[in-house]
Amino acid sequence: MTITPPHLGSPSVWTDTRLLYALEEVVEKELNRHLKVTRDWMPHEYVPWSDGRNFPGFFPDGEVWSKEQSKVTEIGRTALVVNLLTEDNLPSYHHEIATLFGRDGAWGTWVHRWTAEEGRHGIVMRDYLLASRAVDPDKLEQFRMAHMSEGFQSDNRHSMLHSIAYVAFQELATRISHRNTGHQSGDPVCDRMLSRIATDENLHMVFYRNLLKAAFEIAPDLTMQSVRDVVVDFRMPGHGIPGFERAAAQMAIGEVYNLRIHHDDVLQPVLRFLKVMELDELGPEGRQAQEEVGMFLGGLDAEAAKFDERLAARKARMAARAAV
Image 1 (cartoon, rainbow, N blue to C red):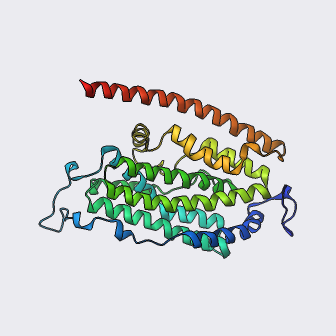
Image 2 (cartoon, rainbow, N blue to C red; image 1 turned 90 degrees about the horizontal axis):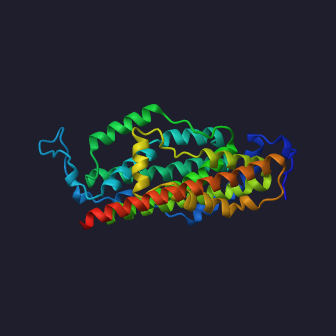
């Protein structure tokens, strides 16, 4: 059933401002739930400080970085850099959501709380990478400067609904990427750190997913169209990182994040929770968007199957070479 809040007018004239007001009560409810279940944690407690030593520069005993000093695997190093550089753009992300959601009331409280929690992720990851000498610190800083100097502009500036739909999927995608990076890193300390970050990302996903569910109840056709647009054109926020395409290909082969993971572990869980393909009280535009989501998922699943075959063949070749 479509719910029209009092004083907000007909669903046919929904605007971002009207939807912001309509969802304010849901935001407050979800914010209170989030604050009850989340647990503050200290980034410095997850960093192996005793492994650290000086780098060259102002310290006469500084030691030049080399790959042999790193405990993490090659794929772990690549994914860690991508994940950290993505987190580094937090100021731009904050600007985006503060502009769309505002800085007042429950919306504003959430915007600032989310930003504060996300800030921990970049702090702990950089401290870990430098203390453990997991990556080349000079290249890491050069990449950071290049990435942040380009700024960030969301693909989902069409409306506030597009942004809510995007982050509902993106937060889960980020959680999966962090967890798989930890599993593939080869370092239990790294795995534990990224597991802690992934817990935060999952709670953020739940917040936005529940908000998106409420949006379906208020404005189902507009929400379905927003979900369609986001699902079809989804890109991770770090796509502007120098060398992202090559790194993404390596992460796909390394099973950190690929088409199969995106389809099975990101898109499908959110869509099933929202019962997107089961909604039947939609207008013509909503039904068309729903059909397009189904068609896209079918095509993506087929592409993922082809990728799975290529990956299995690659593993078989590598196993055969190793056996010689």
